[in-house]
Image (cartoon, rainbow over all chains, first blue to last red; front, top):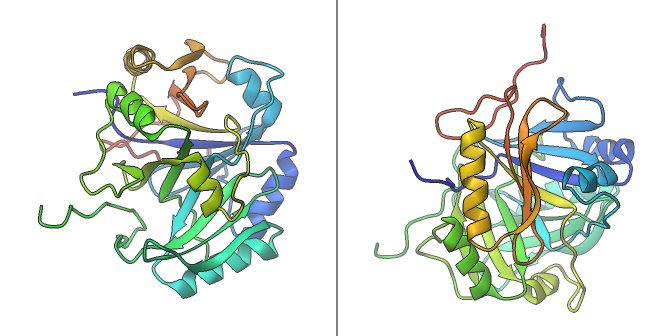
Length: 148
Length: 148
């Protein structure tokens, strides 16, 4: 077996106010796992987990207590099956208090995509990519190259 | 069907130099998908995709061209089955040129974990969590709460 296998099993968002972020994600429709530990909220996704964790706790955990951690250069996308689904997911986030960055629109690569930021500036893209069919459980598997 | 479903299908890392980042991830053991488009590299993971994309392109795509995007507050973790596997994956990243943040060590929550940063400051955690068994394909499913 070779390492590393190409995977991400946990995505952690450092947040300034854990309750505020939990409330934002709850309003957007996310339900924390029942077994979340004190100081952290876990959310089950398809084959991986999203976590909310205090920014200062995260800096300390990274071995650099007091460091200022930045957001925006790593983005999370949720691919949808249709433009209508993109709009529904995106509007739900705005209603939950997300900061609008770019309303969903047709984009140069042939899809439909918009961006918003959560209360800490973590950036989400909600997108429909006609070249990337999703499996029934929502997993994304890249298609083979044309002719391959 | 309710929206949003709790999922992330694409994680995008904004990078200052696409070739430098592709080379770093290649040395660490990641193979880009054959059908990566110009200006972006895609990597198939378990049920989701990792992408490398230019920082300025990402800022423009987010609807805020010229914005300075920060890193470090959103981290990616790769859970492993053993401490030895954590060490192997972590050492491979350091040999590939990663910046050491915290060497893997036993941590307060009962596991074993270390952190490094990629060439753009994107933070990876390599961890073993004895309370989170991994499925054979590497997917992470949170265990039910005790007694639930």
